[in-house]
Length: 270
Image 1 (cartoon, rainbow, N blue to C red):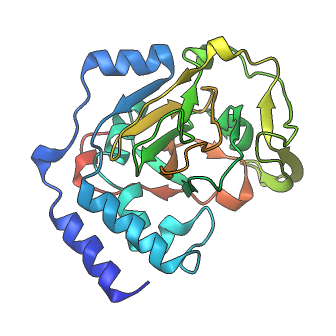
Image 2: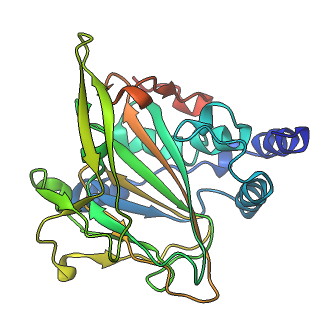
């Protein structure tokens, strides 16, 4: 990563003031607990989003370390540790969050004609206890027409749903074996695939409109996914971070070394 981007990251960090940090209302926390997701506007500034997207467009995949890019790239790290991202996660988790993984998720207009099948993240990232949560940040205006996020409200209150491998006709299709490891050091291989919830009904899904700089926080059991970008003019650009509460064990070996969130906004949390 070039020095210019390190300078931008430092500049943005220095502009983050205490009075800009988001403090959730009790009603928002209750909504998250009931619905399984919460939309927060303006978790990032336009400057932060534009700098990040420009950085990604300039470096492509050269600076990435897969799901762990937040450990080597200052701009990825800035967002993953951001007071309005990790800080909201801490309030919803009621404890100190640790970063599991991060992902840049662009869908180009007229090019990305596949969606992400409806799934529960806990299938991909089993943890004990299950405190897994995701934050999906809109880095462009997003909605149903350009591949925006869809959720099934309240789906986190039921048991884990059975799944099947997606057909690949409308969604990305893949399979992969992951090394798993428990707290005692026992290891095994577990096959994972592009999970799709069995018998998902369209009327149970809510397409979300999330404006640039806004974010959706959701539990690891909340059913969610996205359709293809059918727009010919509007790219859909997003960034996702997954957290667990400090003390949770992540079984997947490739993301097991979680990163503690840092910042004085965590003072007082257990």
